[in-house]
Image 1 (cartoon, rainbow, N blue to C red):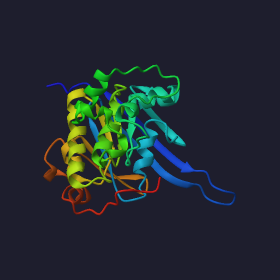
Image 2: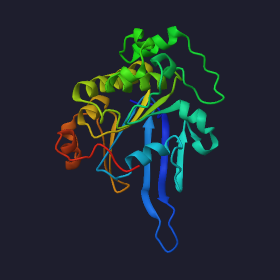
Image 3: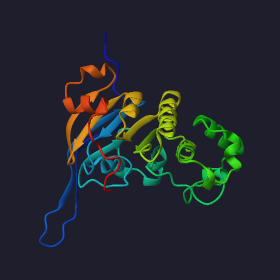
Image 4: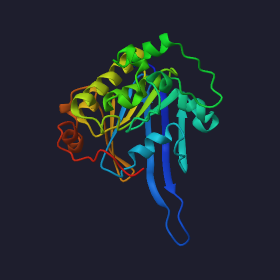
Length: 258
């Protein structure tokens, strides 16, 4: 039986990233020769200890960080040839700490980049809230009154209003208590299935990784130390560090220097 044709949304080849050095100093290398692929509708989880370059790698996928070597492609095109604003609409980033501004949920959802011509009706905003498991009546609420989990789901709703093809998630549950973390995990997983969204997530939570499936990449000091597909049984994972992570036994700090 023929294998299905590959359809990667992201391809990264031999990425290097080093911060410029001062006079007489050596450049600080952050990423070392990283290559990866994310299939359309697929998922990639980036795990590893604090300072391993996970968040930097994530930001390389939508040009919030610029590699000093290698190439990133989105839909087969070198991302350096794409308008950064359009790229970030199509590969939307959700941060560890939800960023909401003074005003109502409605006003926060309607925020748009300079020059954008988005015009969202209340019906569309309400549908976006429903998609992330929130009551559409929340549109009129003051954003400052929301719980941490509600705020994170509003930021996800704001991202999907632009109809992205991919969500880039940087520790989206690390600041939440377990019940709210579970709600966000279920929201992301449901969106991936319903919209065929491609997901790339930095996380330290085994439950999130198990729920997403896809591919697991383990980074240490900016290098890929292990990788595996989670589409089969986790018991079949060969690397003991990946086994330990999925068993909740691998220490991994919830945040890292940016």
